[in-house]
Amino acid sequence: MVDRIFRAIRLDWTVFQEIAEDESAMSQAAIIVAVVTFISSIGTAIGVLIGGGAFGRAVLSFFGDWIINGILIGWIGWAIITYFVGTAMFQGKTDIPEMMRVLGYASAPKLLGLLGFIPCVGWIFALAGWLLSLIAGVIAVREAMEFETSQAIVTVVIGVIIAIVISLILGLFGLGGSFTAGVFG
Image 1 (cartoon, one colour):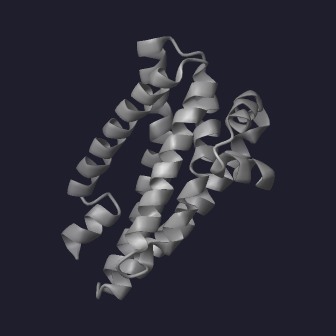
Image 2 (spheres, one colour):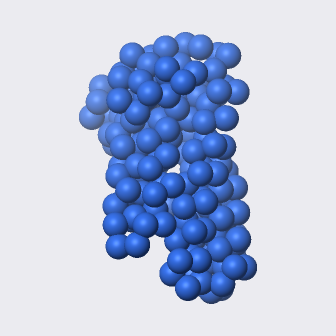
């Protein structure tokens, strides 16, 4: 598993092909998402505290980022959305569990989010992790759906936009993470 994580961070396309075919990798993908999102959420919560936010706001931010944005929307939701977009638009050859496996591993670069609490530059680490994860997501989708890179880019962009809109809507109703913390802080 550790070797696969490093290969995913290095954007090695062969690891995503391997994971797509390995049905036993679902629990590994779930562990990666839970740990990566947990660590990244700690960085966000520390950033809220360092920025003078209340403890309750930091806790709300942590749990919202970890459970809602990280696992439900960021992994499961994105996998489902990506599956439907890719299969409907480009006749991708995959299923939802396969999308969950490859996108779970594609989230590994988000480990940089732990450094998100560093004043003035922390956001750069979090953004870099998110962007690398997005690039890994494109590679993962391309390999799982068995289509061209351009089709994977379109699929991922549409999927991410839909996931962000859902996250913002949930945030407006007090069910999101960082966005919610900003509303109630």
